Length: 167
Picture 1 (spheres, rainbow, N blue to C red):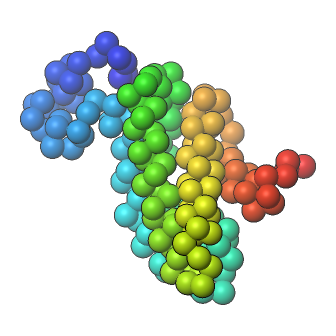
Picture 2 (picture 1 turned 90 degrees about the horizontal axis):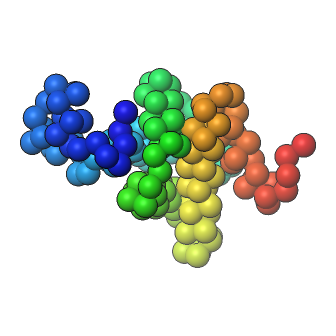
Picture 3 (picture 1 turned 135 degrees about the vertical axis):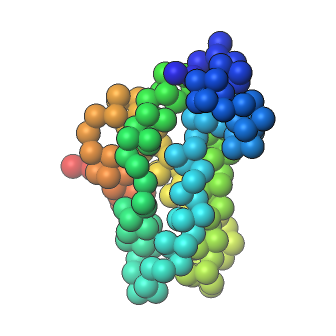
């Protein structure tokens, strides 16, 4: 388990690698907690690009997120660790991850709606990114109980409905 008191040397030893190998894959020990987010980002851009033009923004995002080739157990373990260990450095990294999601989503909105304006694309991208990240983090804080797909759908639907409470 990664804690503030665990060193990179300990993490590397536990993983059976050298510190040098550890740092080839992760810039900080906190980055280990976000590997489940960072890997799919490239895939998200590709999945969004394949969505049909007639599909709504929300449906395109949900279909893309829903088709991630992820290992739910890896996502579960990372979410649980983040929920128990979210310190200042890890919280800062979470903001970077969310900004990365926002950049991918903003680019998609700009391409999908070229006449929509830069502000609208950035607001849509940032809002959808927040909905996705908050859903996974909320799931982690809830000990990863419940259906992650449904929690993500509920989060995106809150945005779709203008933040009106879901009934």
